[in-house]
Length: 154
Length: 325
Image (tube, rainbow over all chains, first blue to last red; front, side, top):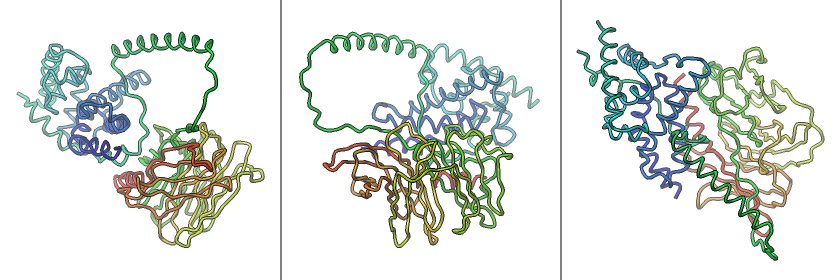
């Protein structure tokens, strides 16, 4: 039974784990936070697999939530977001730096939509918001992100 | 105009590592809840607790007559401590090759043993924690002994007895005072190699360790929160790696079984007070890895049960971490 459950979660990991890790890294601006959040989410999923109806949505939701919690903890203890720590080519680093200027909801909406390909309704479920609110986050986030990147590139 | 789709597509080049070996051995914490759901849960919990209080009060004043317990329940279901997440070393202590590890029976301390360049065997001891920090291996607490060294974690709560062994020769030793053994000792032969588990008392609690011609694991002292003390680790003997699971026999138990798979169970003699099971190490897929340790009494009743982390999976994670360095 456990083997079957582990197999299902492992399939989700093999299918989406790397993409999820990148999405959380973009959102958190830290590969370490992303690794920790994703590993914790999947470990949780293994633990309670029989209670989870949609493991894929569950790990995305929990990973982002864990990363949010970690970012909030850093903000509380250090008064600011942890330093950007994504090892990547320059253009991706620029994107990560620009994303950090967005609000957490804007950032999550933009990453989940533009990188992970989720719809506004799906994003609303993942981040615990409403579809109209996500539409606003997306629109404002996109506008701000474009402005920041243009400013940087220009 | 910035093409966001293109910029985000580039993020696919972001290098990420395979976390699965870490995931399967990770001890998960709690899932953070959404604030609103949290409040609802708190309210539901309050109602349940209030209801339970009333129920217990009613039950306490009711005559239940004679009750029969037909089978003892496990006294403990605890994991043998958190895993050696310090494998992701930023201090460059383990240079490459191989990282072994152990989990002390009380779940409070663990250690890493790794071979570096020039083949010194390094023994690194630290408290197990979910988020180990490089700070636990502060340089000022490091004793350098020849090509090997021992690290004493600054915030170690339990007393330690640490041996650093190179090629079977003891090169460093640091121990807390111990009293006469009260837990016993036994030697188990696996493929011609002798593994000895022994337990002694100390002011800081019992010390249980395993020694073999190639080195030793465990040996630290501490008190467990759970009643079933189980440790595990790996020792290389004659060029071959062996996994051992060992511990103190719970009160009332006469037999300890290590369940490897639904069809494979290894039995240990538990009567000397300490027990040990050794087996040639499995590959990283964990095809012959330990899963559960059970202690039973004479009648076959389950006294205690503990799930142990997969040594093979941790070795895999350690190898990945070492390659990444």
